[in-house]
Length: 256
Length: 256
Image (cartoon, rainbow over all chains, first blue to last red; front, side, top):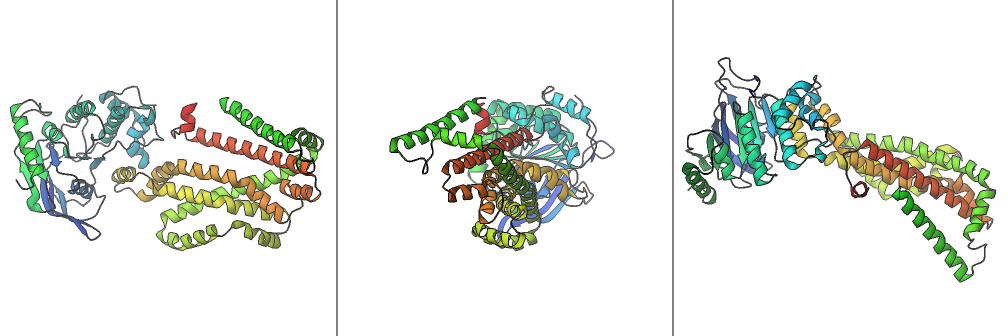
C-alpha cells in the first residue's frame, strides 16, 4: 500500500536529514550524556544500540522534547525549534489507552487535539497492519502482538516525517517481534526513524545506519558500517552474521 | 445470581450461629433475642423502622452527594497545583489523623439536631478515602501515556489541560472507584455516629433509645435494617462503577 503524503517532506520529495548537535543532558546532579552529535539520514532508519542504562532512551526523550537538556536539534539546513513539532513517538510498551477501543486509540492524536477524527484513514491503517476487524474492541481483548500493531497504526496515523521508537518491540515474543519488524520496515519505509534497541538483530534487520552508544561521552558513540541490501535484511546473510559479531564486540567491550 | 446465592448462604450461616449461641448458652431474651423474636419485632414495627431508615439513608445519600465530589475536587486541585499541594497536605494529614468523631458534638452544637450536622459528618468521613484514592490514581498514571500524549499535543493550546482531562482523569477512574467503594462502606458509620451524638430521628437515634429501654429485639431489628440497606447500597454502587468502567478487570469479574 502506498503511504499517504506526510508533512515535513521537502518539495523535491526527499526527507531532510535530522542533525543532533552537542546534545547534553543532566537529570538532577547526574550527567546522563555529554556532547552527543549524530545525524539521522532523511527517510532512513537509524538504530541506536547500547547496554541498558547508557542513556539511549533519555537521548530519544530529549529529541522528543520530553526532557529538557542542552544542544541543538535541526532538520536539514533549517534550524527548528527544539522540541521538534513533527515527530511521532512510540514507547517500550504499546501504551494503548485501556478505556478506548482500538479505533479510538488509533485516533488518539486527533482526540487529544480536539480535531475531527479521520475514521476512514484509521480503518485503512488498521487494515494495513492486518487488523481490519478489531476497531471496536478494547485493548484488553487483544493479544500483545495485536496491541503492538494497533500502536503502530496509531503512530502512522500521526503522519509525521520523523518517528522516534524506544525499544518498541521489546515486550513481545521473538516471532511476533520479527513480524512487527517486517511491518515497520514496509509501512514506515520513507520516514526518518530513530529506533533505540538493545537487540543487535533488530538493528541488523532494520538499520540503514547503526550506531552503538557505549558510554556517556561523545567518544563512546560508534557508527558501524552496515551491509547494503534491502531492509529488512536477512539474518542468514554472511554480512549480517559478521555484523552481529562486530556489534556484540562493541556492546561487550566498550570502545573496542 | 451466584453472588445472591452465596450472600443468602452467609446470611443464613450468621443467623444459625446466632441462634446456636442463644440456645446453647440459654441467654435470656432481654440480653440476646432469638432470630424469630427479632423478625417479629421488625414486622410489628415496620412502619416506624421504615420512617427512621428514610432519615438515616437521606443523611447517607446527601453525605455521598457532597463528600464524593468534594473529595474529587480536592484531589484534582492538589494534583494540578504544587502550591495547593504544599498547603493542603498538612491540613489533610492533620484532619485524617484526628478521629473524625470528635467533630460530631461540635457539629451538633453549631448546626442543631437536624439533618445538617449528620450530612456534614457523613461528607467529612466520605471525603478522605475519595481524595486519597483519586489523588493516588492521578499520580500513578502511566508516565508513558503522558509522554505519548505530550508528543501528540505539541504546539496545541492548553495541552496540559487536555492531557489532564483525557489522560490523567480517565486513567485515575479505577482508583477513584475504589475510593468511592470505601466511602460507601463507611457511610452507615458516618450517619450513625452523627445520630448518636445528638438527634431526634434516624436508625442510630432509635437504637440508642431501644438500648436504654432494654428493648434488645428492637435494637437488633434497627441494626438489621441498617445493615441490609447499607449492603444493598454498596452492591448497587459497585455494580454501577463496574458498568461505568468495563475495561477495568479484577478477580471478582473474572470469576463470573
